[in-house]
Length: 422
Ligand SMILES: *[C@@H]1O[C@H](CO)[C@@H](O)[C@H](O)[C@H]1NC(C)=O
Ligand SMILES: *[C@@H]1O[C@H](CO)[C@@H](O)[C@H](O)[C@H]1NC(C)=O
Ligand SMILES: *[C@@H]1O[C@H](CO)[C@@H](O)[C@H](O)[C@H]1NC(C)=O
Image (cartoon, rainbow, N blue to C red; front, side, top):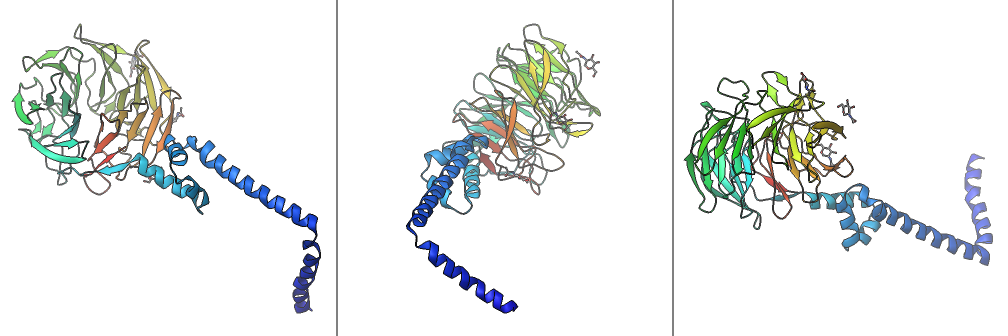
């Protein structure tokens, strides 16, 4: 009985279908329905991949509208994967490797557009004295002499005459007070005047009067410094200027559009700081300004095109931070803005030519490969595709062609000589 039923059902249906399939009105309706379904599917795909695509990133718009691969994307079985892969290739690309793996190095854009890398810590955790130049037109690295004193956690500042001033940092003997000059057309190094204080993890800012302001950092006692000093490129000498109100290391310093320098947060002994202060180059004095909402060190600060300063991430006594805040120089106040997607410290930050801010990698108990973009016009973050390598203690430089060159750093398992472009 059971067998009979199963056997008889298809036969019955077959007979039925023969009857209605051959009627003309059924054929016309059927064909119309099929045509409608095909049109609806094409419309849906166009909506998903062209109209709603901007939500992910601008690069996807470029991919689907301007490349001939759009029809291919629509007909593949996994169009989403295809679009994602293409976007990643457009956002990050590898470029030549540095000659030496390094972290805690510096990267400076020279007047000719090349990028000067100095010092740092090697893959075997030795202090490096080597320097290399990246040529953006070829993507190739060339060595360019050496600093006299191997160092990491130092600073490098491009002077108005195009030379580069390297200051302080640390080597096997401890923190350094020495400074050196790179002659950028000749590619040679010379020592210049010593700072009054040895310091590492400090900041150096090029003022509009051509002098370089160095602030804080860890001193030879192992404790954060409140001292600040000025380098005069004409006399090659250092003079002390007023002390900051707070001693600090792992802080930030940003030159504002009014010429003042904003110093934020940092670490003093075991406390992360929420305070900020302003240096006025015309009077040589420091004044406190509003406190940040979060105490933080190892964070970043970026001057946006509207003059406002974006502070992001870092760490505090409670761990790595995803929070970000904005400083308004005209009001002297801080307001919080949207959180980053990832909490991170020791990351890099670059202001792009379109005004957006690119945050890359950094540390959250391990090196991160994630990157995200802050849009000042909406006050929101969007994640972008990951870098090829996770990196912390790396460097990022905005090239004159608008791309961002990310170099070296510590990866998840090894220190890196690789570099990539956004
Ligand atoms: C900033 O915070 C400190 C405590 O961390 C407090 O003593 C000081 O008064 C605050 N300053 C301002 C301007 O709110
Ligand atoms: C940002 O994240 C912190 C926790 O990490 C949370 O306390 C805070 O409310 C968040 N702020 C916003 C604006 O979402
Ligand atoms: C980036 O990599 C992390 C793992 O390291 C992963 O969780 C995340 O989904 C990736 N993000 C993107 C946009 O591919």
